[in-house]
Image (cartoon, rainbow over all chains, first blue to last red; front, side, top):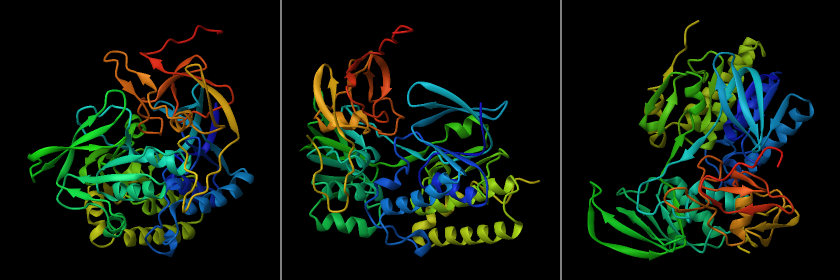
Length: 368
Length: 106
């Protein structure tokens, strides 16, 4: 059986940051990621990030990933971080704290970590409509992977469902890839995402249809169109349904935290609508009710990549500290800095929902 | 091929060109990219047919979680083609139903 001091599950922005932080204090880290390429959603983001200098504001997401990868190379060459890509965590065994994972599709391996940071990210939500399983109905993250990581055109004409930040950003990214956006549908009466993203797609002439939803995907083997419907504030149909031609229907209707491993480990969980699903209760250093398990990023509640990176730093710091790495002064100094950055990112009107969600699951500490 | 040739921001670093087979038909893809991406670039959108309702399924989540893109790869069923890398000469087949596990030693 393999052994490691700190196992970080998930190599997206949160997991990468957790691994780097823990290694910076001297801990030995194994970073497990199920994808062929590290970086999670970060490597698919062509837009420039917000926040402050510390969060690399003004830098495109994929270039922020490059900065993290460069930092990672140093620790890899020193043997402080071992990266296991294309390895999917499959289970946590409570009786001995062992984690199992599968390499690719066939080789099962067990690893015994002393501490774990769960940075498993999120998964796409699906909404019910007729034919929603037809090939051509794709998740927004999947479309980003196809076009921004592998350079494959997802289709010719895309109907976007959802005008939150993801729906708006992915629409813009599709246009960068030369794909036409038929329309962006939003069932609510207002745009959920930032105005700056909405303005970019509107300037390119894409209609954002508020109070509209998808009723049906058309096509026998693959998507050839869709039926859309105007709705009122109670989501009841208004007027006649309309038919649109498209070969892809992109669902950007929200994400939900990936939390199976946290359930398996017996962490105290709570359903928090503002964080988009079940999440682990945690203390201010991201430790769950399980004394050896920390959580960070979208797995701890759907937010965005900048705060995921800071949360990852906090979790990595705390997991390393639990193994007696770092001096109390360093820990205090860094945790104060990270908490300040998190509260800056979550300040104001845009952070209100997150703040409401977090106050339902954060406790000061779990007691001695 | 449905490939993005010109992009205002991204430069794609693709692996070397390799041949593979989809239901016996020879196709071209890039080594190391997910099988599902290579198929999509070749215009293939149906990856399997469900066991009971016989519904076509294709690409969906691209992170190995949803099971929509399960296919038979080199004789092995239920391969997550969105997170499995394409290799030279790979034989990829549409999966019908649950797929048959190959006999031991095959």
